[in-house]
Amino acid sequence: MPFHSEIASRLVLLDGIPSIAEALSSPAMLRQLEAFDAYPGAVPPTGVITQERSIPGPHGPIPVRIYFPEGWALQGRPGFIWMHGGAFRFGDLDMKEADWTARELVHRAGAVVVSVDYRLAVEGITFPVPLDDVVAAIRWVRENSEDLVMSSISVGGASAGANLAAGAALRLRDEDNWAPEHLILVYPSMHADLPAPSKSLELALAQMLPVLRLPPEMFRSMRENYLGALSSNPPGYSMPALANVDGLPPTLVLNAEYDDFRASGEAFTATLAAAGVDVEQALVRGMLHGFLNLPTSFEPVDDALERIAERLRATRTTS
Image (cartoon, rainbow, N blue to C red; front, side):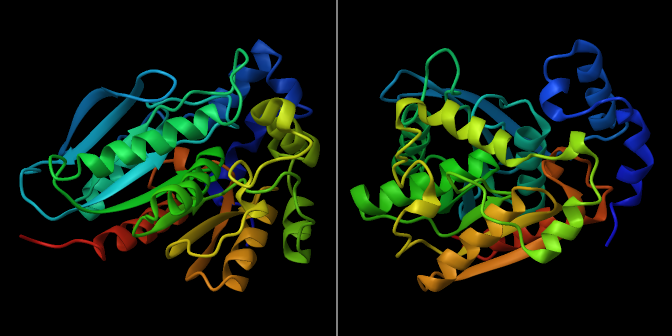
C-alpha cells in the first residue's frame, strides 16, 4: 500500500533536505525534521504510575523508569523490559518510542514495564557496554520480580533496542540458562551489513524520498560506531543474526513497510524459523522506520501496539 495518508501529506515539510546524513549536520534541516515528526495534539494514555530508579550495573548505575497500572498492587501482572532505539547513539527514556510505548502497553495489557536507559555508544563507549547494561537490567528485574508484581517477564526493543533485546536474550540463554516469555523486535537491526532487499522492499524503497532512507552506508556507520575495534569481526551477541539462535523464545517481529531495515528484520525472521524458533512476522503497512514515535491515531501504529499487548496479555496470571 502507499504511504499512510497523514505521512504523505507532511512530506512537503522535508523539501530541500537531500539526505538524513546532511540533515543531522544542519540546524535548519533538523528543525524541518522535527516539524515532520511533531504531532503536538497527541497525548499518551492516562492511568499510569511511574517510578524512577537507578539499578546497579557492571559499568555503574543504570537509570530505569518503571511503569505500573493504577491498582498495581494486584498480583499477576505481565512484566515487560523495553529498550528504545536510536542507532546506539541517541535516545532516552523520554522519547515517545520509549515513554509512550511503555504507557500504551501498561494501558492495553495491564503490564508492568521497565524502560532501560542503557549507555549510548558515544564518547568512546562501544560494545559490550550497552549490552552489559541491558543484561544487568534484565537480571535485576528477575531478582526483583516479586516486588514488581510480575508473574512473567518478556523482553523487547525497537531498532538498535531490538538488537540489544535479542543480544541479551542470547547471552542469558548461554550464561543463565534462562529465556523470557516472549521476545518482541520492532523494526530491528540484526545484521553487520544490510541483507539484500526483497523485490517487494525494493519497490517500496523506490517510492521514498532520499531523506527518509536509511541506506547501507548509514547501517555500516552505525555498526562501526557501536562495535569500535570489533567492527570487522562482530561477535554474535553484538549482531544477533550472526549467532546461533537455537532456544530463543517465541518471537514477534514487526517490520515497517517503508524501511531499509526491513531487510534485516525479514532475514532474521527467516533465520529464527530455520532454527525452529516460534516466530511471527508482521508487516506494518504504510509506515516508516520509527513508527512507534507516532500517535495511535495512526491505525497501523495502534495495531502494532495491540499485537505486542496481545503477547503480554497471554502471559498474565491472577493470584
